[in-house]
Image (cartoon, rainbow, N blue to C red; front, side, top):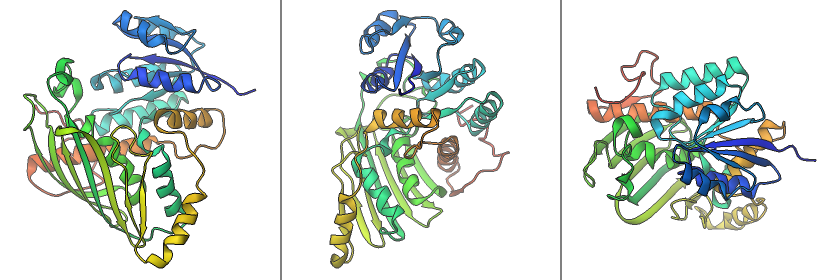
Amino acid sequence: MTERIRVAVIGAGIGKAHIAAYAELADLFDVRYVCDLNLPRAEEAAQQAPGSRAVPDINAVLADTSVDLVDICLPPRLHAPMTLVALEAGKHVVCEKPLAGSIAEVRQIAERSAQTGRQVFPVFQYRYGAGYRAAHELKAQGLLGRPYVVALETHWQRGSAYYAERWRGTWKGELGGVLVSHACHIHNLVTHLVGDVVEVAAFLDTRVNPIETEDCAALSMRTTEGALITSSVTLGAAGNSSRLRMCFEHVTITSGSEPYQIGAGPWKFEATDPSRQAKIDAAIQEVPDVLPRFPGLFADVHARLTGKPDLYLPSLQESYHSIEFVTAIYASARESQVVRLPLSADHPLAAGWLPE
């Protein structure tokens, strides 16, 4: 019989999507609690997981020794503090992005995880989908060749309704703007394919909304594998769209543009040499199905916690690089210079990038 992991979801905003995914994997997970200070919102979300309890008190959740895993879906400023508290309570942790507001906090989380023997799973769900898995498998088989250039688009539409949540658009509440709230997923996805960022030059601006943080960005990057990346980001588009176009030595890949499930498809794979197209197509046909988005991520979490092989579960080291990369972006934009990674432990923004 499959072991079921007992879960408490903290925060019933994006937490509702997490609960729906756990409910889809009811043979793997048992949602015990949905916790939110807004009890009616918690009660509404809990209806997706029959048998779960809606509660407003996180301390009651952490005190319940039957809970194995705490899933943190709170405003970003609370992510690192609550991850540390949950680890200290003996819980494994799933945490929404961004995991923390500084590389120093990620180091602290890693240390606490090691001390308690509890695991932390950052949320990078874009890699779970048929399109991305095909790209990943082609790379694993050596069919892509060297990466040349990558173009990323995160073109979303966010206005006053989105910012009705008072913490959004603020440095203290959201820990940043479009870089941490929208573009972090696609940036992680591409580094998973072409290597960590080692250089970045960034231009940021607030052009769309009357908020504190940036809502437009233009980035140029180089990765460990030599790929040159451009990333165009805005919250002022007509509708929501995310897209990758990646030119490798042997294959050019174009993703779909569905914003919430960009990893799913349809993705297009074009051989640079047409004579290789049949081999590429045949390899893609052999790629097994994968659960998309949150169900795929959580199925991997279950596999890791029960000692089974997982597909490509996000690691704390990946989350560290993601936060380090955000730090480098803000440093580059403010100093008008190219910033090289990894950053030193005594970097001026190591303790956080929030303006003074």
